[in-house]
Image (tube, rainbow over all chains, first blue to last red; front, side):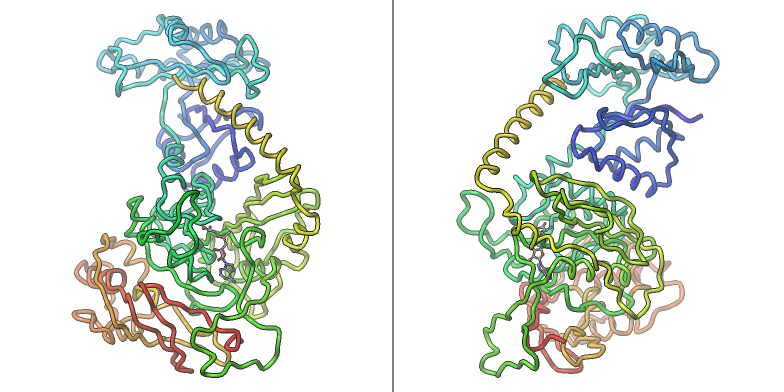
Length: 484
Length: 125
Ligand SMILES: C[S@@+](CC[C@H](N)C(=O)[O-])C[C@H]1O[C@@H](n2cnc3c(N)ncnc32)[C@H](O)[C@@H]1O
């Protein structure tokens, strides 16, 4: 029998939720049925999955999912939730009863509850309330309401055999919290998602970072969208401080990286951290992996210009994850000179720093997609960021290639005017003809536009800061209320 | 730089160079560092390699001991072989030295284990 689950998400990066979960589902070949149409304002989905094992697999990967609960009852008011749960105890049909579609009441088959009622299974009940704070006593009172459940095991607060979860959802707007919850759920706790990884991989405690290191959460989302699995071979050709390799290695991939910045790869750029004067000797991509216990997944990093070929024909990677330069916080350059038949004299050669020409965004993305078409395994994925001016954005601007299919496209808003989109391509055809297409004809040059609109005057920056502080306070308030 | 990487690298970036493969290795400092053995990964990666090039590269830096010159049929069932391949592919590290382009003789320095494949603007195609 398929079981019904409540998947609870963090209320952030909402536009990435489907992309991340879909990638994980297809990675594990897990079918899913939506019992209720997901909606962006609600941080939860009600779904059916073939088995508990499937639910656990999803939770073992998703960083956007907070936890997963086997649903027993769902209602729109506290009284109704208890009525439903009592009805469940009588429901011997082995099926879900779905009364009163309007109110979306879910009454589970009795067996789900029965298996948790053995005298040998210790248990506890946890209360979580979203967007509203309750005292411990109030929560205990809520738990008292469930005494009609025929639980025969002993109560155990630490590591019980069974954890039952009671959730009250008061919406997502901390400035408008209703008296009564909008939605209520009760069920058996199955698994946590990977939210802990965010703290574990946090840039704050990472040995080696640069000024464009990807935050831990988004790096993990990227690794999931790239469907990275143990033993995969992964490359980031704009590797910088290697933050994307950390996420890939965490999921068991062997990693390569390359970057044009010699000083960066040798950990000798100016320190990024506030208050740090010199970089320590230990700062390197390899030591970052060591910090997280995945050193054995480190293969190599190379100093190299992505606009030039480096790899032998026929070298195939399982996935590419990368964040190319947008030309705003770091230059977009490649080695070259705008003169024909240029040569350098011998004595000039030693200690010569090569001159660079602009490596525009359209050019970078053509190279990236052509490389992916050539060097990805079939069905391998390229996951990369693409900066856009929000007002100008149209899907048609996205780079495209006949061998690559765009699978997902999620927006992260950066400022009032700009955003970046996380693009996921899958290689669908191995027949890369010798003609390199220009996959990004039509791709606008973000950098030119960015500077043309004179992004962020001082006033705007101040406003954004204030906005950020306000959101932060709101988020903190909400998180405070979630603690049981 | 590990030999698995060497097996995949070329100097095609140079003006006038066609294949740029394999690069010759000149090592002044080699370290052998222990890496967790993962037989599935080794079996999976071997078909992606040019075995002959791997053997010659390993031999040129004195690490071909016990490594067969050509692949036997059921190598993925031979644990002893996989361990040798593992060592040569992932544990032997060229820390200092250089790689040399077989066509032009251009040298690419390796320092602190990181090859520098950058060209100057006059060398670009
Ligand atoms: C947005 S950053 C990537 C940051 C990286 N994800 C990290 O964790 O630090 C872009 C990187 O591209 C590199 N880059 C710029 N032009 C390049 C080129 N032509 N070839 C290779 N890398 C280049 C820059 O040195 C920079 O490190």
